[in-house]
Length: 138
Image 1 (cartoon, rainbow, N blue to C red):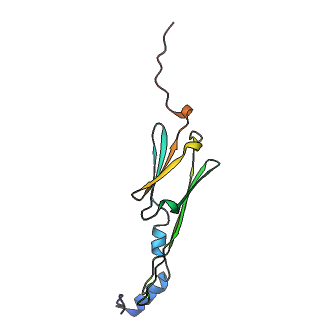
Image 2 (image 1 turned 90 degrees about the vertical axis):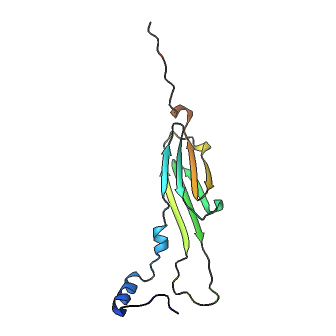
Image 3 (image 1 turned 45 degrees about the vertical axis):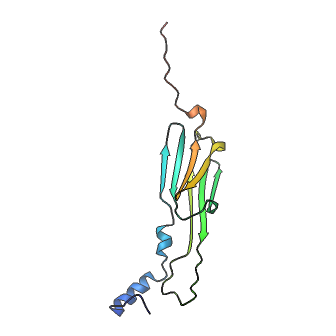
């Protein structure tokens, strides 16, 4: 049984040839949406990556470059028939961010909750805003 009903064989054939073997799921989700938030004492990088586990991520910091990557492969088998269409495949991404010198590299931390990977980059003490100072007149 075919789930796709072909109306016009010439037009449908053209469309099939044009988009044959395109992995649209992989293209649309290749790079996760990212928010970067700056507070007075830290930066937060938030990546929307639902459906993953903590162990799926690799976070590296080298020479002022923070690299976040993930590579997973979804394996499914069909025992009772053949696939009419197969879109499940491997899902990987790699994002790199230039980190300013004001970040304390040894205090970078990460957490993953509810599909959001959060990387916290604390600022160095000398980069924090200084309190207002009252200067007396002599």
